[in-house]
Figure 1 (cartoon, rainbow, N blue to C red):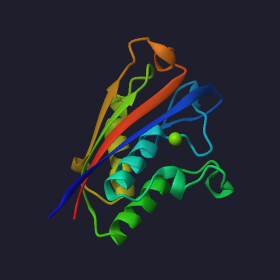
Figure 2: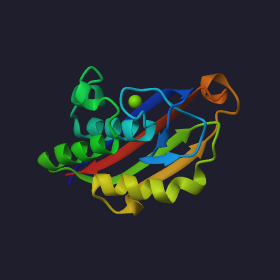
Figure 3: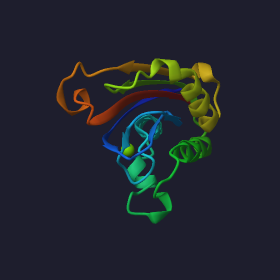
Length: 158
Ligand code: MG
């Protein structure tokens, strides 16, 4: 058996009048990510980590933001598609570990629902998805509440 790791990162600006979607669920807040799709940083970083581990390029290759098909897209669909690509190459998802960096709102209480949504889209047990939240200590754009970012490491086996 071979084991491979991939890393993913994403950041979206936050603006008023957008719906805050993180980890596949909608959170009550007065700002949300600006993006061609729903701007879900966790789903996007997760796609990149999984694609990277499999050597299958990145999210921009598979879901270009110039394609009207992905305008306003639910990013869980991206994860479902990535899972299919992994299946075609016979990769299994061993573990996915994510960090979300956001000043407000508090994310911890929403983690069970996020894990449920992400695990369902990837077709894995919830135990394989791990989520952590950080603030940016008031520093830089994320710290000023102007953006949300996420880092993800994915481990695959074959
Ligand atoms: Mg993105």
